[in-house]
Length: 135
View 1 (spheres, rainbow, N blue to C red):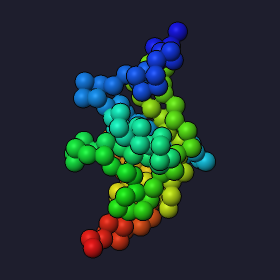
View 2 (cartoon, one colour; view 1 turned 135 degrees about the horizontal axis):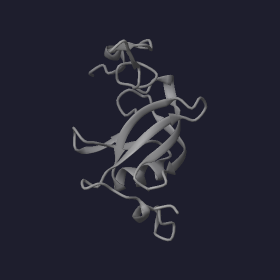
View 3 (tube, rainbow, N blue to C red; view 1 turned 90 degrees about the horizontal axis):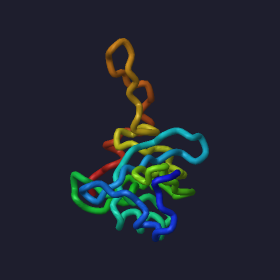
View 4 (cartoon, rainbow, N blue to C red; view 1 turned 180 degrees about the vertical axis):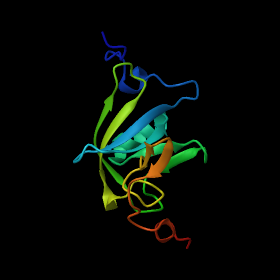
């Protein structure tokens, strides 16, 4: 039996952590590649659903963060799934511009453990300084 109670209003069925957050994995809807892991609160999840674009909660900035607001690399929402316990989300997205990571790579999971060392195995597609120009 699932721990996600589908009799509750959808936001109340989610199991938020002690900080009112839930981890959200963004996955490319076309390829299945995991792009990033971010955090959502109630407001960011509501905004994601209403806008049709990924909106996360930035723990470092302590504010809502529209993915792509500075880079232009938005995540268009295709679907949202909750896991069996209701304590993690999976967003299927279309990654606009093909870059999800602030390092200029396709995704954030670009380091692979090889012989007890972390090795960058994915190329930088665009220099981050070009993506995040001040101005």
